[in-house]
Image 1 (tube, rainbow, N blue to C red):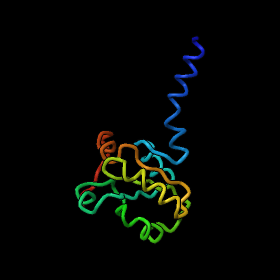
Image 2 (tube, rainbow, N blue to C red; image 1 turned 90 degrees about the horizontal axis):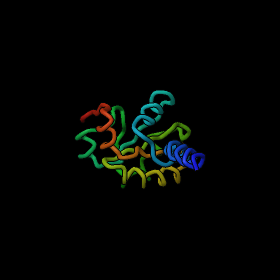
Image 3 (cartoon, helix red, strand yellow; image 1 turned 90 degrees about the vertical axis):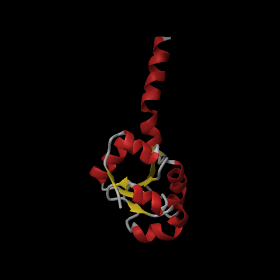
Image 4 (cartoon, helix red, strand yellow; image 1 turned 135 degrees about the vertical axis):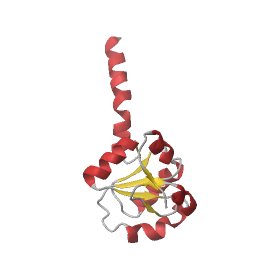
Length: 127
């Protein structure tokens, strides 16, 4: 019984890392690591008004409705990690599929969006 509890706890502990590695969602801390260690490109898929109100430092704005047309021209190296962000994380999760369809291999969405970024007390930039 104790062994089963230990296995279950370990599984729950490592599940977020496994999910993130598969190209799903990424924690704010994980995003910072990718940005610092692997030069990840951050694309904010929010509308221009939302982007102007506050965004991840050095992120680029490509609204979700324009992602198909503009992403490949904006990010030339499809091997770089790509972090997609929006206000709540809903649009960025949808954008992951679009980016993968365009040939980007290492794409993840910021879990919880800018709300989670703010809650982690990470810096925002305003346009």
